Length: 258
Image (cartoon, rainbow, N blue to C red; front, top):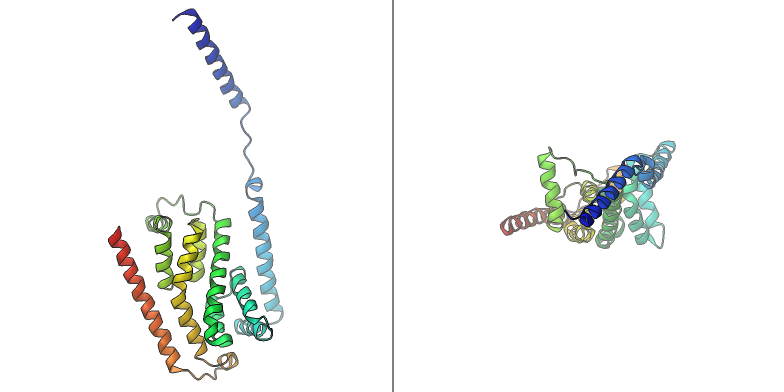
């Protein structure tokens, strides 16, 4: 090897070696758990405080779930902005773990057929709230579950075919919040999630609102003095059946396409 080339090679080697030793001597400091997750911990504390306040209030006032539902129902009916208030209550419902089914039924009690529109808007807002919670708190959830074959199978499917999978889960009436949180945990495309939720929730929303409207007033329901409307009950059951059939058709078409 010519002498100039040997000298350049030695200089390069010495610089590389010096940088390696310096890196090993002064490693990059690792961020602490608090530094990496401080914002999530603060949000979690706020969420728990809100949830605790809700349960403390119901306990202090001896409120049952029926009493809470009646209190929520009294707010929209006693205000000129009842529909907006109903939508807002529906949107923040996931923060308090209040059952979505009860609010959907209340939509039929309070607003009749218009309750379908208000409930669809509120349920989609609610879905995005719980989706955002899952996205914020669910970093890397299920990513390392290599041994959980079934979980990984649905995880991969939900990420690769977000719209179709969420749509089918809505049409077969899987637990509403479970789908929302799982979609957020897996960080699927939020546009596909929102569109699938908006479309897939229509049959269930219409069915439950009609079912709620068929029972008469809320007071009659809570006291057990109920007179059912057979026509709305039949319409509700038919819509549920059509939703299940549609989910099967979509699933078969998806399988055929793959």
